[in-house]
Length: 143
Image 1: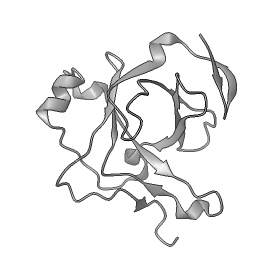
Image 2: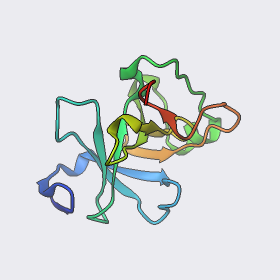
Image 3: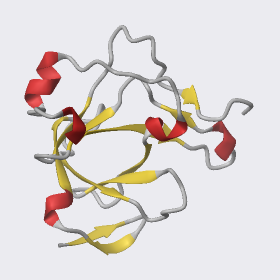
Image 4: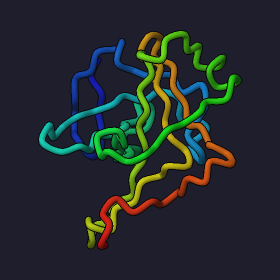
């Protein structure tokens, strides 16, 4: 399938790579279909591109690659909604905010990770209430 995007131009994606967000991204309730893009294999950042809105893409990162002490406990309702049966099939990513004029000021939303079930292509954003995680955790210590 061909997908037109503002940031990456026209790209070819396989339909089995499209995730259905049954738990929507906060503030983007109408956007249900996204694909993870990895245009620059030399960075830890990937992009979560909307299939429905060519101009909507979020920079995302796997916090596990950064060796942060970050563990999450998903509520049973989330496990049920995403139909998670195998923990090895779960991918956790976090939306980042990268200031254009100061990349060292990049922050990571640890409070509301994106949860992907790789077995069935279901996904969602989950707010970890009571976790103590920050919505804008600094990625670089001395920024």
